[in-house]
Image (cartoon, rainbow, N blue to C red; front, top):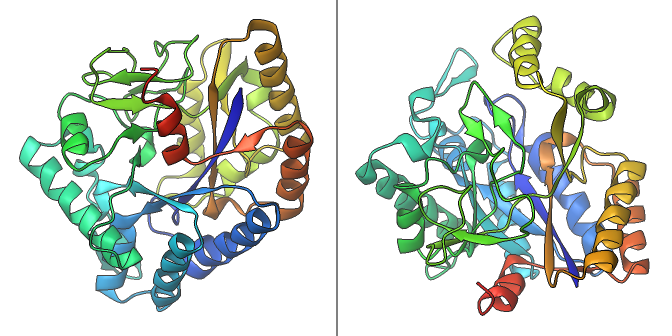
Length: 333
């Protein structure tokens, strides 16, 4: 049995460039409409650090509309997840642009006290956004997918009531940030872990449901819409330096292609889906939760997404939330 879990990172660019209206509110509004029309499920990973700091600095008046939208998202039955880029918490708006605290880029590398402090702050603000003081999200996605080293952050997440992480993307590797998911279990669709997200642990504190990836030849990856989006994304480093830094991560025969419903074209989405369906028929490996990822800032093609939702309905593939998936898996892990 296959379920597709569509997840959306609700955020502006990582360095603070761009407006909430164009990069968050308007794309989310269109996605809410198309998923509602198809009676499909969608999980919104709300990046709370940037929203809190933007609100406190009063630099983008559209924050009020974003806050209303987040409340509407929850009231409409969509799932809300927790997403944090911790470098935002000490950010300063100077000279018309944001200066972020990149010493806190990876939450996992901070002290236990600092991790606890920031998680308390993040969930408190998320409860404020949804106007529910008892709300606790079931799922978490780390900023820039950084869930390792997990030894300090996972117990802290579990103490907050988080049950699921969805940060791992199999085969992922970034020298500059320390991401290395090349050793994640290739044959598993989910697993428990505590100290290392790559290593299943029977008594693990969190359930990992990774973002689905397909390993493809490197030359195939470095083309098309996703490469154009990489080039267009505003960066504080020069384009030449940015490309040079990323190319070092691609010095291997194959790289992971995320199942990204905002960056892939329709043919790529259909091809990956067909491979998943064929594998399910051939091997009958039980329940398969498949996590797709998207970003509001990536200018999603609503017509294409609508066609894809039509296609998976034709294939009898359900869309699910993490909460629904957790209920299915709790007795299996």
